[in-house]
Length: 133
Image 1 (tube, helix red, strand yellow):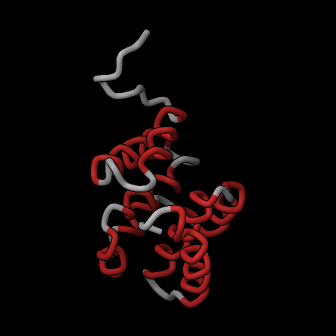
Image 2 (cartoon, helix red, strand yellow):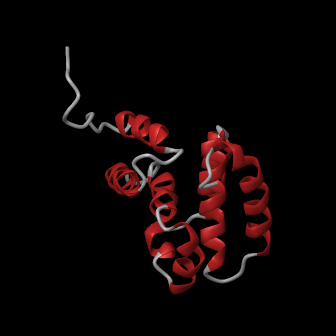
Image 3 (cartoon, helix red, strand yellow):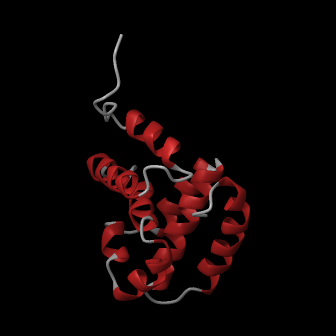
């Protein structure tokens, strides 16, 4: 998924398997990862249903466990994106902060344009340096 749109279908398939097989602290990471992948693929409604059905409480707590950190070590910036996508429905301010953190860690990444659009939709003004007419 971190490679961009070209890898998203493979990511969705792998994360579906990962969610099915995950145990203990790995399960919330797999659920959040699948929700993010589905969202990035454009399957927003499916991602929202998955989050509503499987995520309880603050997703940042699930991502703070030792096992979650171990799993996310290969793609550290994705952890904030996992939290952000889940927080959008329960904590808009938290989602904005997480998306901004993600964008600061991957400003030129393959998902940066989509994150900027999300931030605008969530009420974050465009950054300084842009001229207004």
